[in-house]
Image (tube, rainbow, N blue to C red; front, side):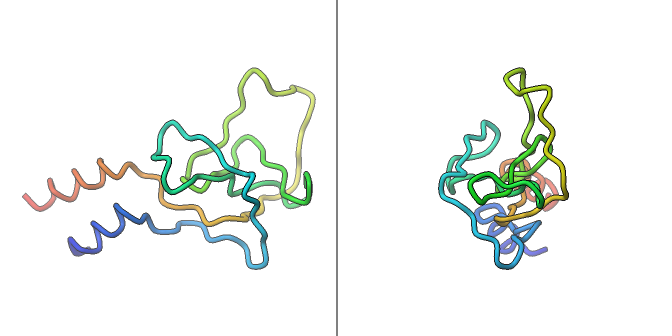
Amino acid sequence: MGLGMAIRDIINPPVTTPAAPGSEPEEEDKISCSRHTPLPDNFIAQGSDKVFINGQPAARSGDKTTCDATIDVNENVSPNVRIGGGTATVRDIRNGKSKIAMFTGIIAGML
C-alpha cells in the first residue's frame, strides 16, 4: 500500500460492509459514538431483516453503526424483549480502526 493510499484511507475510511441495494436509511438514525470522530455523522447501519419499527429495521445489541462500532445493551434495556431475524445493512459501514493508530503504524513501518 502506497503512502498516498494510506493517507486517503485515514481521512476517508474504506467501506467494509456495503448497504443492501434498495435500502432506505433514515436521517433520524444518528448516533453518538465516544470512540470515533463526530464527522462525518454516524448512524445505525444494521438491524433485523424481519422486524421493522416505522418502516426501518429494528436495531439490536450486536448490530453495527456506520463507524463500525457495535451496539451494546445497558441496564435500561427490557430483559423480556427479543428481536429476531437475520441482519439487514441499510448504510455503508466504514472501517472503524483508529486513524491515529493506523497513521502511527504506517510511519513506524516506513522507518
